Image (cartoon, rainbow, N blue to C red; front, top):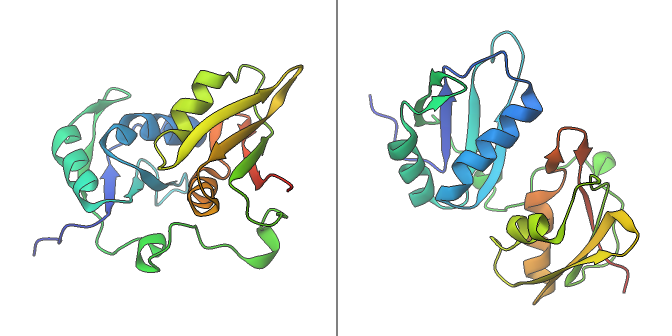
Length: 187
């Protein structure tokens, strides 16, 4: 029985010597050329080693990635890719914000078209953040704060567009140790 096309692709035969954070970053870098990624799930439990799920916003992106990267030597092992058997929770709910339990949510301000980023690594520059955020519609500009390397502002055309980027990149790791925290800037 063939698995129907899906926003989520399932990858196995991944080199399990690679650290989870590094693997997620590398998968993001490799797969984001095909389209916007909503989520990447990689687990290091015994049963799930060497496997990952990549959730795309667009079905076409998932299909292209699956065709183009089938057998791609990722950390010296050819990836095996197929559609996941079921849609990811994120897609099934029809929202691009990952499911949160109330307690884990980052305390946030009222929606705003300007996002406030903190916990950024020292080597962050305007170019890196622009490349990360310009994949989202409505992106206008990145503003670094002189003398403070760990914070930045990102401006969008509307609150909704800012919200989509905020949900998609919340906790994104620019480096292995720094998970970016994103909130709406105070009005």
